[in-house]
Each structure stands twice: as C-alpha cells, then as structure tokens.
Length: 415
Image (cartoon, rainbow, N blue to C red; front, side):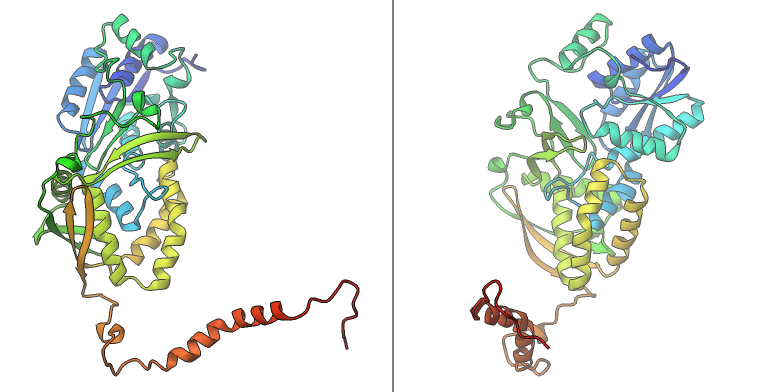
C-alpha cells in the first residue's frame, strides 16, 4: 500500500494500454488525487490521440499529448547513433533512451500543473522504473514518485484485466494475445506472454515494422546514406530533416525485413529477460555509420571509444541519461565524430545489410600507401625492424622457457 497519501495531483505517464488505464483509476481511488495524463508522441502513430481521449474517459482531469518526435530524434536517437551504441552487442537501446525524454516532459507538466507527484506503469521487475525515476530525481530532486506495481495487490496481467472489467475500463488486450508492446518511431519492443519462454518462437504476425525476410523482395535494394559529423543527413542524395530521414530509413529497411532482433538481455535489477525488437531504420543507419567510421577515425581514437562504449551503453540502458558520466562520455564521443562525414553505400536483401562502399573528404585511407602495386611512399624494408622490435618480448620469453629451470634451493649467482 502507499506509504503516504498526502498527494493531491499526479502526472501519469499514460500510454492508453491496460496497465496505465488501470493505474489511472487506481490512483484516483487509492490516493483520492486528481490525475493528469501525459502521453508523449514519439512516433507511435494515431494511438497518441486515442490515448488522450481514453485518459479523459477514464477519469483524468486533464490530458496532454505532446509531439516530441523531433526532439526524440535529434537529442536521443542521433547522440546514441554517434556513439555507436548497442547494449550487449545487439540492442540498439530504443526504449532505454525514450524513457528519459518522457520523464523530462512529465516533470515539466508537473511544474506547470502544480502537481505533487509523478507516476508510471513500469513494474518492479523491470528497467523502466529505474529510467523514469532516475530522470525525475535528476531534474526535480524533491519529486514524489508513485509506482503502483510496487504498491498494489494486483499480481499480474490477469489481475489487471479483471480489474479493468470490474471498473468498466477497456483493457485493450486479450488473453489470447497477452504480450506487451512499446512503440516509438525508432523501434518496437515486444515482451511478456508467450515470449517469456525463450524457446518459443515469436508468434506469426507479431512484427509490425518489418516484412518477414522470407517474404521480402527477391531483388536487393542499394541505399546511400550521407553523414555530417556523425549525424545522418540524407538518403540517396536527398537531404532530409531528422524525422523525415528516420521515417524514410524505416520504410526502406523495413520493406526488406531488416532490423529484427530476438535476445535474452541482462536487466539492471539483476534478472535476465527475453525481448524482441525491430529497429529497421536504426539498423540501416548504424551499419552505414560504422562503415564510414572505418574510413575516417584514427585507429587509437576508435579503440579508445570502443573501450569506453560499454560504460556508455550500460549507463543509457540503466537509466543514467542525465548522469554526469553519460554526459561526459557523450561530449568525448561527439568530439571524436567531427571527421565522420561522407557517404556509405549499402545493399538490403532478405533481412541482411551489406556494405558496398564508402567515401569521405576526411578519409584516412591512402590507396597509394596500401596498394600491392609499386609505390614510392612506403619502404617495405622498414617492416623488418618493426617486426623484430615487436617480437623482442616473445623471443625473450621463448629463450627463457628453453633454459633449464633451477631447482629449489640451488645457489644463485649474485654480486
């Protein structure tokens, strides 16, 4: 049960789904507080307006639906792309960095509405509770947070469905299709229900952004992606604003079945979970960006970034978007990205992405140096000393190993 009922107005992160609809009614009933619903439009489509209407119908005193698409792409998608961020090598972090954006604007609405608290529908087992609350406390240290899944006596989805029917709330979910979805313009995540068993194949028809690779076109598509200082700025020679560019990338890559990931990841709270993600445009942009980095980044600079990258991706995944370590790493990575300007050419085919070429005015690649043909800029004899110096420790170790080993107690010559 709630530790304190001294709350008069609450801003709720509201999606219009089962959990947050039940939570809206439960807060009103349990706390006797007014509820202001906040829905962030980060590209999930027409459901944003539907959510606003449903919030008011479910008892919210006010409902905000705020278009955050451009901010989402410019200030969250692109920074992680510039960093080259993937959590545990596979997950492009689409939900992880969406939560801080939502929480940031929840706090702004709470200030505007004079609310006492903010609330969310994240469970006590997951990462999202941490992401919402770390952001809330970072931006408003004295804020109160209501997390019903840590307070009420509802035990799971079945209880929520029963509660919704009992109180005349449209659950928006069926027992036959109980997995949950979270969508934004960068990706869709799927978890729960039949997906909880990692041996189960995702149900047919689950994926929404990508064509089944087996049914994708039999003809490959070649795509060119242009970058400036690590940011994608154009596709196939057309310069596009960030939202239009990501939408175009999603459409192109999704048609070829690119961007599906099925993984078991390590949650911050300590357990493993199975999640399915589809990130078509993000996958295309990530591979294009990586190809261009190969051409433009100094070896040791890139190695330094790659050594630090797990610290960055873990910070983002765990909800520390507004923490000083993430911000410091972002500044470093953004500085590293200054030469990453140029074009990458890729082929999309049946779920795969293949790099065909890349070019840049800042290329560190020198054909006249690397060529196997005759050249006048590299003296191959220099390699002899280079190899011998690098082999020195190996030779010494080998010589030592070949010498007789002194028995314990044998005298050792000394001065």
